[in-house]
Picture 1 (cartoon, one colour):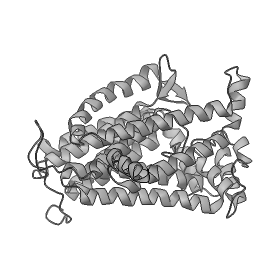
Picture 2 (cartoon, one colour):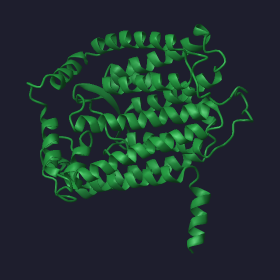
Picture 3 (cartoon, rainbow, N blue to C red):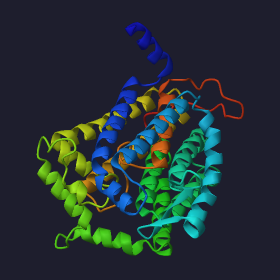
Picture 4 (cartoon, rainbow, N blue to C red):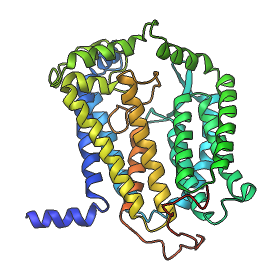
Length: 399
């Protein structure tokens, strides 16, 4: 029986087995912590007549995690070269969705229009999640196609910069932290893709200029400025949620209060999303917090192993971009919870309670696993360029 199970797992769960184990373990932790942290949310829903219950919220969260795992499994079964073509279509859909969300039909929360509500199922959806995935995949595709022509600015790098500017510019109108993190991920991807340094400096200059204009135009500058001032000025009192995050971490100690015994979960406005890491430390102690940190670092390591083992430029760049995007977001979220950065509002990937963000996280990891299957790019697909050489380890010839 054990041999049959092992054979089934090897046949159906392809790719890096350690990545699979990390994702499943983080998903289990997420269900346990969200179940513990949503008591106040359930109470508020019940008061408003929405019939909320902790069990119901946990069941919905579990179903979204299972849906994300299911899509991750489907995505990892697909030849990852297909994502080169699909990424362009996804970008073309993302642009009007981002525009519509901000200017017309977005659901407003904390003075920011970031969400669309899907009819019938009444599930919120952030177009920025789709845009992030599409931009990283398309950027990997463009860089891999043009490895021999990276000094041709107008025909090679201008289209790259144009897409980065359009997507990050639209996102920054309502979500500065997501836009900045996506921009940094794109810069990392361009560095790995051997883009000349002087071109990257131009990209940074353009990004800073357009980002500043977007912040002012989107009326998010005052919020960003206030958060930076609070973080940099030790005399200013931290925001209410951050203050109680510090209390949760301080009272957690080394071993924590135990599962389900958090007290700050009943005080913090969003203990199940932006500050879930503080609840993890309060209930499971510094040990539990370090375990979660280690899992994300292990995810980064296995993702970079996938990059090194990739047989082609597109696979390596695709895996690197998605891996950096997820882990950087996790590091920023955990850094905010412990006071190492200004408040951003970014959820903790795979752990925070969320809607469609769990779905897109699952898709991203599924694509990384598809690359880790080690499919060779020696035989180009129809419509794909034959130039899929591996990315050299040195940049000296292009810097």
